[in-house]
Length: 448
Ligand code: UD1
Image (cartoon, rainbow, N blue to C red):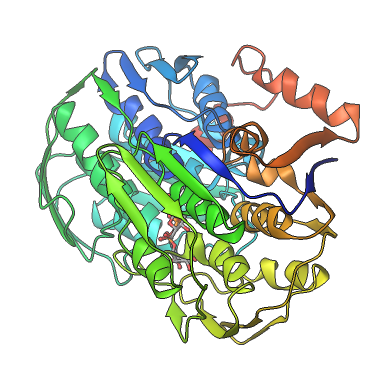
């Protein structure tokens, strides 16, 4: 098992170059399958969610090469493929392969997707939108299977699911006819997917709004595209600066939309300055408690910042309340912060933070990506030494978090406890070739 060891109590100061956005990259990787030609992506984050999705794509014949942050992808030789549990279960972004492969091959199948332990994360809305594009959709015990050429129509989302909106877009861009998606998610990453698809030749109107109009085209072409910076990683590092009383400048942030995040930091008594491609947070004055903060779909406060904000508010003298409205069980942070001396509890969907107590180092465990990041923040602000287990969750979305934060003065290091696991990861990522023994075609063949 690997963990991050942290010696807390150091003020962070200096500059960090912001990594590319995980949630923008994953759907765009899936979208590459729809392009008849090579795609070149710049600013691609080197995180395990990206590597896992590239591995899944390689199993379906998509070639890729990641050099630094430049990713070359070629889906010319891709084939229809059933993504079994060992592939689909790794990252939630994998569910997007359904819409992309359906759009390209008119058939797709996958086991039920994985992701963080933050809620049930059903895929009923994904299936709903694909049904509304008039393809045959079968939900079986072993996975979801879709078949038929998507045909334009009216797609209605009763809840603005990010992934279901993206799946609808992926299936609709090469569909026959025109599709209108009502109730679409407005997250910046959905708009980014639209812009990528537009550049590749798709016809989409209403980008960034809750009504998207997609006129199907027969083909998309290969392109070069620069991925945006990660707004959640930006929020995490700014909040880390705040927690350690530091002064951190983030570079490479041009165009990164911080709506919902800056507002919440402001309410907590923090100001972020933005000029050119930089954001700067210099902690000064008192950190304030926040009476009530609710997570909700964009442009509200993002659920992906909830755990980090909880950690931050443990240091604000007074009572804060954060209510989680997006995921029903995203509360992994609460018990772990208690181990570090925080007075925090949770009831129903809300977290109650009675802040102002000093945190002390402890051995804690992350069970999801953002809890992991929040525990690192708390460890850096705490007195003494901490161990954060579950660092593999953090690696899903944060590129080299130890190296990055060490650059601005953090004392932290990644430690591997068992060699076996390390060897396994190296094997998986060695050359991107699929070496699993699953029968790739049988599940699709069984499907009518
Ligand atoms: C995406 C992000 C994730 C973020 C989330 C909400 C990626 C790869 N992940 O996840 O980081 O936390 O948006 O901003 O982009 N739901 C259903 N049925 C469905 C689909 C979703 O009930 O078919 C529910 C989910 O259980 C959850 C809520 O809708 O309670 C939001 O999920 P959704 O917006 O789909 O999130 P993801 O796309 O999974």
